[in-house]
Amino acid sequence: MKNVIVVIIVMLSLTALAQQPATPQEQTPATLQPQTPAAPQPQTQAPAPPKACAIVEHEGGHALRNIMLLGVVGAVISKERYKVIETNIAGLKPGEKMHGDELQARTQGAKIIVLRKHEDLAEAREDCNK
Image 1 (cartoon, rainbow, N blue to C red):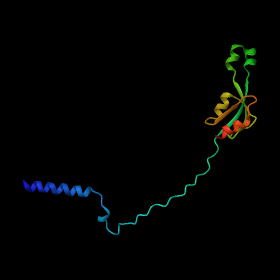
Image 2 (image 1 turned 60 degrees about the vertical axis):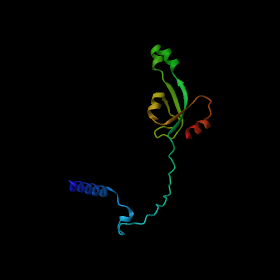
Image 3 (image 1 turned 180 degrees about the vertical axis):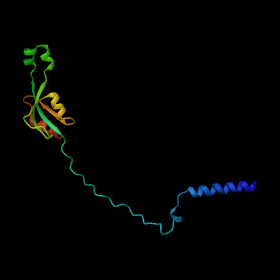
Image 4 (image 1 turned 120 degrees about the vertical axis):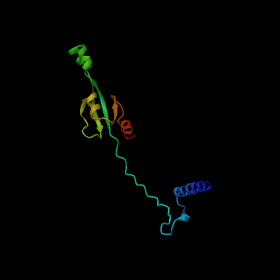
């Protein structure tokens, strides 16, 4: 019975030693490598591309005209109109006029700044660059 206990203890100690990671003292000289700190890599970041932005002017809608021509149905189908003042979005040109739903579809994910009549364009440009 003592022999069985001794064999079990020896087997457990051998498995425990086999599972431990090797320490630097146990490594052979061929596997030792000098440990040098990694040189810091210079981080060069490319300038961020300009954010997609459009400055548009609110031109109003044709609600009054449509109501006079078509009554209640004219009020329902009336849409607001916008004129593009400045943009860096591909496919939009300054001076182009469109309805709100078309503007929204063509500028998906872009920042849109709406100018009312007689508002300052310089402030809108600053907001666009933020």
